[in-house]
Image: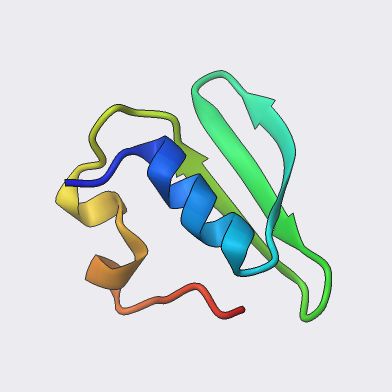
Length: 60
C-alpha cells in the first residue's frame, strides 16, 4: 500500500513541487514539460487513485 504523502515524495523526485493544498488534496505541478497532479492526502490510497492503476505514470 502507498500513502498520499509517499506519492508526493515520488512525484517530487520526478520534478514536481507542491503548488497548493485544498482540503485533503495536494496539488503538485511540474513546469517543464507542464503537468499538474492532484493527490489525496490519505494514509492509504485506494486502488483507483494510483496513477499506475489508471495506465498513467509520472514522467521525470
